[in-house]
Image 1 (cartoon, rainbow, N blue to C red):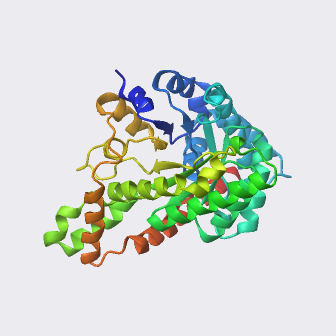
Image 2 (image 1 turned 30 degrees about the vertical axis):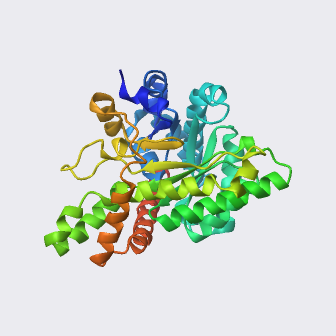
Length: 359
């Protein structure tokens, strides 16, 4: 049996961390939804830069857009991206309807240039939501301080949100609280909470890349701790998540239709070839979670992955990992802030490349 199908029975959904017109127009995404039960799609500036620069399906439209000098480079990019997002939403719409709004979402990110601009993020998120005009759209917002303000406001206005670039337990906690406040406000204003969906994306492989380098620099007894930090972080984050969304305060909101914010595992393509290529799937399988995977990781898990409930095992070992890292002077919260800043720089650079491509 395809192990990807087994994940559904364990309460986890797999989303594809990729989007392009090649996938859309050549029937690839539709096949993945049908055969592998892919339940969502994520996008970001890096993904769109790769798609637009490599896929032949953009060339004719891009030439026409460039001929219209009244358009800015960002407007041209958005017109290309929005069309792709709409097409993906339409492919996933039957799943969205049959799951009563639990599955079938596609994510579109606001400009990384707005990462520290709460008002700008709010305005961009609402504008993109209106432009896409699909119920199964998630507006993607980074978990910066300004992003947290925008997340609460977007949710309060009934906008479904994918929170991105989380790298620490503090990020997870603050994002969950922003969502709870927002959905509470939405309900109090008379909104239908059942129409609002949110996922919180915790990035993993980048955590191991950074922490492993620091452990290698220390050497000696620090070396056995390599390759364990990201999974430990995710397991502890899930414990915090369960505590937040099982307490009485959220229970009262749930009775009025509020959905729990789902944990999403991102950056799940293994970067270190010494580690299993399905490490960030097999280790983190559990209910009310999403794993968004690149094509290669999807293929690897389909080929040799094992689908077993693992997310709530090894919790004590995860806590011990964090304690051991502290003894070597490694602060996981500080590392999370560093990784978020690096992630923003990467997306900002990809966005600049995108605008150069559409200029």
